[in-house]
Length: 440
Image 1 (cartoon, one colour):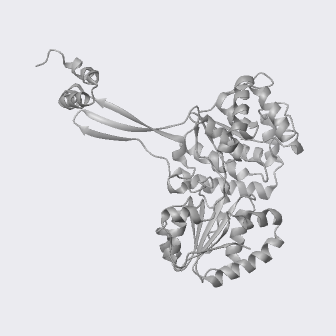
Image 2 (cartoon, rainbow, N blue to C red):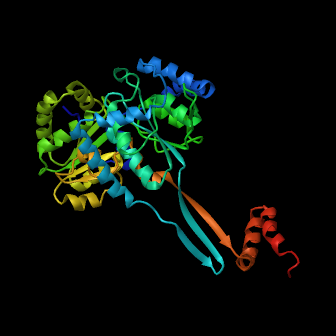
């Protein structure tokens, strides 16, 4: 089922590994020329353009962009009790974890009379995107809203594509999740036009203002990602998310049933999803292939899963040792990394690059997707080498507050002048010495 890359003779250099390892190929630049006119049209025509594109891409034209509050309440009232209970538990656990992430202001006395305070200030208004393509993700509403609320963001709007099946509103599960989280502003708009409307704002069909946001977070398709790239600067973004990824570092002691099930769980998302097994055991690799042959046939989205597992972005990488496997997974920098080896906690502690690490046989990625308390909006495409997943910090800005007394400034004035002169910016120095004119 999975193609194999054999690195047992020698582990290549990090640069060679990046080139050799399976990876989904998503060229955002290739669609920018298609997205740019949409963004410009929304800038010029506002909601009318948004509704035109919605009708073209989603085959439905909502009566309005903003979903009435009564529809949010009704969606929650009609939600399956088991799903409601699961969402409530997901929210509870996420709040427990994210509440611990809130930074506190710190004041440092540099010299007597001179302090620098770092204040952590939340972004004022944020747009949170919940996809609605091949699947519907109320869990993504939870993962976006909880850290934003923990950060203290005062104004939130959830965007999700309208569904023809539900009269041009987002899926009821999305509306119900927003209601559970006390978010009362939901827009029925998806894709690139959603990011553009969030960035520029507009006027709804009933004349109500749709205020622009300062930041947009949440995953979406390549067109939404391209719009994020185009509008970055006017708005902040969390990341340019690509197709989902799972890498599993496993040894001969791993259960092939578990490994195969976990690879399938992420392949279920998208035909471009990446499922990668890294192992020092040919026997395990063979057993996983045999399990995949059985489990893929039995899963609901078997065609989608088979396409993902058979794509060039998925595969098995054979290594000589678990240590070599660590080098491979660090070079790969997976969105989700499972460690299913002996001494899994010890091995996991040595991982340097991953969006999230799942330790041992009973911490599958699916747990993190829903109810671990961690966040499932994570860096993809190798970005875990330098970026983090969504967290409370995503929605906070550090502002330095400088407070120096007259004596404290006088004491350092000579150094400021010396550095200003060295950079040929004498007015910088004069801005200090002007305060002490007439002093010897």
